[in-house]
Image (cartoon, rainbow, N blue to C red; front, side):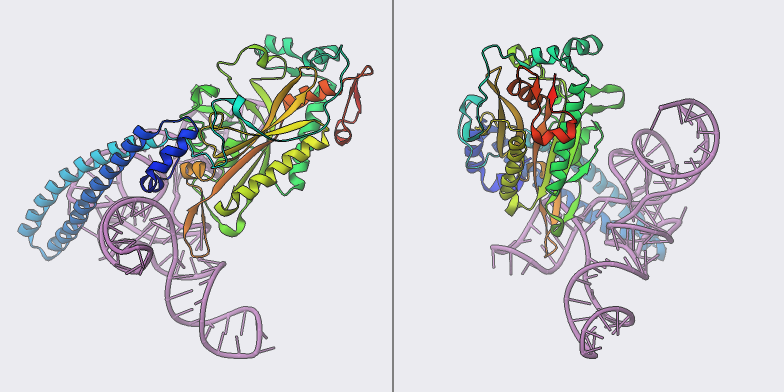
Length: 423
RNA sequence: GGAGAGAUGGGUGAGUGGCUGAAACCACCGGUUUGCUAAACCGGCGUACCUGUCAAAGGGUACCGGGGGUUCGAAUCCCCCUCUCUCCGCCA
């Protein structure tokens, strides 16, 4: 969430910036400022009363010791009165703080100055493109048909056993998945990331820490008996490692990578977007996460972009990079670049990675801080990116590399797959 | 799942109702000494909020796993929850 102090000091700016996200913050900001004033005045009263009460308690103690029972009794009565007052103030304070926090988490992160205005993904700004568009014959087929033709992915079987959006991978299809995971992990490790294998279920506090809760509750699978959520991305467990942690400035940046299954309910999705591998309820993804010093986080964002671009280059996939516009930017992000690969048979660009700087928005929620040389604590910046999400990569690989003989495997992957063609 | 023990500052660990935001030791930081290193000695060493200030110093309050209660007063007593450890059961 946004820092209260910043909202207080830069009220107009906050409202202005959030307008880029098409978020009308005026009313909310006013309420927050009012609640904050209220909170502070209550706290002052309460602190004063508590201070008095503490003094009294000490006095009573010494009266008892010296045997001055009457004085002690009088002071005790006074203290009892004070106590009921404190109780009342405490209740008020709790209520105000609760309301303040509820309002505070309703404010999205401020977009970076470079974020263009816009309503939807149609307004995203194309900042880069590279690679050759494959020249496929007229009878080229989409990946779901290729998957069937070569018996490497079975969607019907998934529907039978679980439901739509939960495919089985089989034979060389399964092997290809495993190869991609290992390739992505090895590349990240070579780039200095520390590999983690995170839990796939998380508790409520973690969901809140990275901003999935309370905003996107309906998008996660929930295991009610144990009050746990299935992770929509490894970002959640990996970033929450640092919840309520003060790290050393010298340890920054912290670079972590994790492969995980990801589970998304995708409520409200429909149509051609969900065909085949385009949108699944369960998929595989390798995620990179960095915790960085505020002064360096945008350099880090560039570094992460380069990492992702390099993966796509090695996979020989044509890709482009988009700077998300205000309307398409996520609730918690300050700046996001999406990577899309061209899936030649569908003739569509498919999003395969999203690289974001959250600045201190997540850090403030989860109290992730670092201590500087002078011993002062500051909120750190958090960043993450997919590197990469598998299904659409697989879709593009299948479609773009289809030949009369079979599906060609890019060189970089062959040592991982152990074969160079799917036929 | 059953029985028991426990959770204190970065770490070890003292502390069973007031003098404890918390001993001691270790780690860490600064200094003195020293040819260098080490040792020794001295000092510092939690977080959040409020107040104060240009900034600070200073002052106040809260926090001893989390929440609630008893009491004039709780790390210390009571209740609930979470987690850890030991034993038993079950088991990939």
